[in-house]
Structures are given as structure tokens and as C-alpha cells.
Image (cartoon, rainbow, N blue to C red; front, side, top):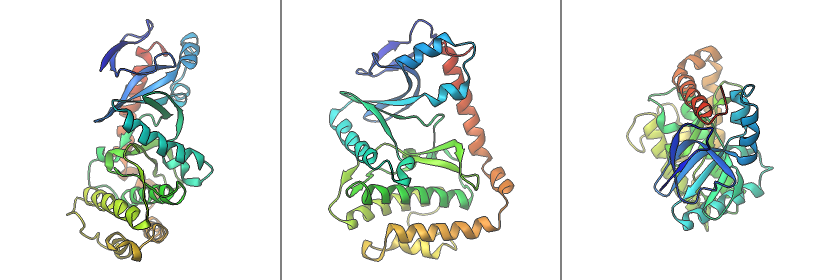
Length: 293
């Protein structure tokens, strides 16, 4: 790791991994770290210089909309794996599910840039238990993302789909008031030879996710989710992503039919409160970078 001082207009220092493309991007805040990489909310140099000139009139949402997430890798082999997956996703950008996966915007020797989800919260950061609607929403997002990777990206799996790799975008909500989800970190993604391999990979992480979201024993069935439980328990020859997705959507519709949007919104207060805290921290980072008064 190397220390990199922000431009003179900034007042904070953060540790930037060697190889960060300082000639192209200005780091604004740390987005996250892992075993093989560091991720930084950043602006292109062009946008950064332009925003410095309009500091007095810049607003948070405009600045946030220009952020990208620059991921710098400690190992080139890991970068190569993720780049291949991101490029496969990009080729199929016309598919409706494209927006639920990390989307590449640029790349270099040991880094890639993707559209930023800012502020970023992970599913793993939630306090459990959470409403059934949110559990189903997360499982549905995982299922659709894995179906996209397998069916639209020439038979790929994610390979590491745990709760820290599913981001919650509280700034965007669907018609029921549930936040958008984005699956990230494809550095263990790989092509597979058969649906059986894809299903085994998905089922492992789906069962782990359900056990953590419902605070239950791994693999134990969720009450009143018979059809969903059956899919997640079945072998590949008895299952399909399409069938599981239909079962989740049917159960979701049943629950939402008896729930007011106001009630659901109040039960997801922790999501909105966490997002507000993250937004405040990001706004401070913009101020420290000399972009807001």
C-alpha cells in the first residue's frame, strides 16, 4: 500500500494502493477493501477540475452521479478474472438484468472502474431479522443475477455471492418501495460446463444467505415458503432459475397484497437510516476534497 495525498484543495489523506490511476482519477473516499483489492469512490480528473471551479454551486446529488468505483488489485490474475466477467456483462448490456450487476466504465493495468453505488451498504450490514419482503427481494435479486450470468454470459457463475457482495442502493426503489440491489465483486467468477455446476454454486450461497437473513440453521426450510424451499433443496435436474424466480415472485405478491407501503417503509427504517448516515459521510468527503462549501 502507498500513501497518496489528495490535491492541494483537499484536506484529508487516505491510503491508496500502488497502481491507482492518479493520472485519470481523483479518489474521494474509500468504498471498501478486501483480500485482493481496494475500492475508491473517485471522479475523473476532468470532472474533478470542473467541480473545483463550481464549488459554491455544486450539490450532493450532482457530485454523486459522477462518481465511479475504482478497484485496484494486488494481484493481476484476480483483476483478469473480474475484467473478463465485467466485459461479458457489458456485451449483454441490453438485457434487463444488466443493471443488477456491476457495470464497467474503464480499466487499466491493475484496476477497473465501475459505476458507483454511493453510498454503498451491503446486505451483511443489516440487523436481522428483516421483513420477509426484503428477504425475498434479496433472494430474487441473487437468483436473477445468477440466471443472467449463466444464460446471458456464456455459462458463468459468480463464485463468491455472500452478503458483502450484494449492495443496497437506497437511492433507487421499486414500485413497492424496496431498494435496488446490485451484485458486485466478480473476481472469482468463472465459466462452467453445465447447469449443474451453476446451480450447485448458486444453491450454496442462496442457502447461506437465507440462513443469515432469517437467523436460522443452514439449509433449514423457511416457514410457508414450501415451493421456494423445494427449489433451493433440489438438485439441478429438478430445478431452474426461472422456476425459482417465479416461486419467489408469487410468494412476494401474496405478502405484499396484505401489506401497506407505509408499513413496509417503516419496517425498513434501518435501511433508510443507514443510507442517511452514509450520505452524510460522503458529503463530508466531498467537502474535504474541496468540492462543496
